[in-house]
Every structure is written in structure tokens, then in C-alpha cells.
Amino acid sequence: MRTSDDLSRHRRVLGLLFIGANAGNLLAALIVGSVLTFAGLLSGDVAAIPVTSGLATLIGGFLLLTALPGIVVGVALFRQRRWADPAAVVLAAFMLPSLPFGTALAVYTIWVYLAHPNPATAP
Image 1 (cartoon, rainbow, N blue to C red):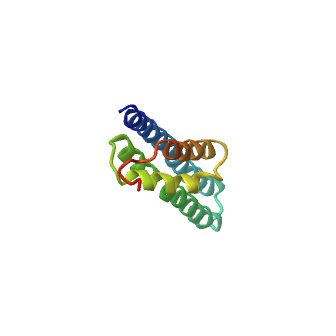
Image 2 (image 1 turned 90 degrees about the vertical axis):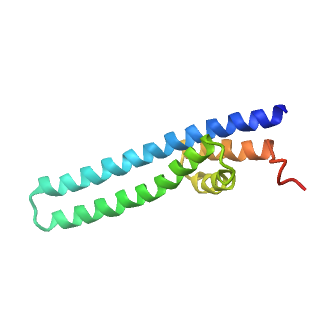
């Protein structure tokens, strides 16, 4: 059936896009954490080092925690796991305010699942 093939192809594409977008967030977490930590060390101010290190931990940790679920869901979508479909829609809802790439990915995700409803869950 053509619709099933289309959905399968869109799920693989979504998986790659989720992995790519969230790998970028993971890279941003590493860069922000490193830059803030080194900025405190380079300043030479004893009071600035713990502040910038703590800030690096908070910001880097937040970016890391937001990137990991997207990578896991992206891999699951690429491998055609059934549980990844609702997880992708939930993550897409959280990505909507993330302009411009998160919004585009969220709109594409929502479109895929509205245009290709799962026949197993249809009434």
C-alpha cells in the first residue's frame, strides 16, 4: 500500500532530522559549557570562576537534557519503532517556539502524522 510506504519514508526522514537538530543542541551544550568555564578561568578573578562554572553547568546541562530525548526519538523513528510516533509529536510540540529550525521540524512532524494517520489506531 502506497500510504504505508510514504509514512515509512517520512518517519525515516523525521528520524534523521530529529537526530541532526538535536545533535546541534548537543554541540551547543558542549560549546557553551566550555566557553563559559574557560572565560571564568581566563578572567583570573577568584570570585568569577565558580559563578561562570556554575552557569556553564546549568546552561550546558539544560541543553543536554533537551537534546538527548530528541536523539533517542530520532533513532527510534529511523528504526521504525512504534512508540516513537507519539513521542515525536510530543517533542514537536515542545520544539514549536524554537525558531526557525525547531518550528519547521515541528510543523513537518505534525503534518506527517495528520496526513498519514496510523491505520492500526483508527476507529
